[in-house]
Image 1 (cartoon, rainbow, N blue to C red):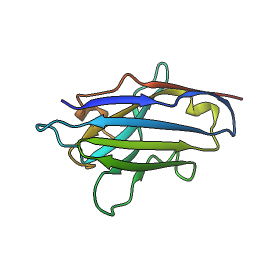
Image 2 (image 1 turned 90 degrees about the horizontal axis):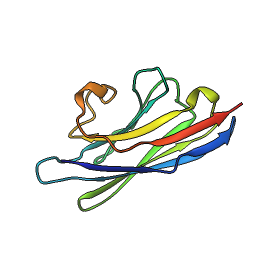
Image 3 (image 1 turned 135 degrees about the vertical axis):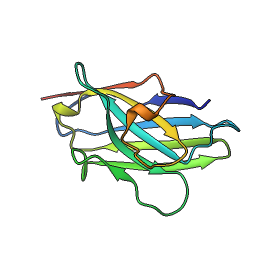
Length: 128
């Protein structure tokens, strides 16, 4: 089973920036080829924010609501895979618990229902 740990959340004012980190450790049974970021605000469904393939030159994926403001990047070292979410021009509507997830491909990366392993999440709060 994939192990996932998020870090980097906090509180900022609108227009500010935060950088989230996700550390994912794969097992011999679960190879990580895609790391995704999701978020969930109180009373709302979990939604996909961004995803990055961990190999090759394919471009990352973004939800329309964060395009141009968020940037996802990656690094890897053996079984440990890292994904970073640089969040700029933050808005109050970006306030949510942010989770990372991982799976074997980025196909339908935004579908939270396909995922079984989640990290503990990291809170992002943006005040107006």
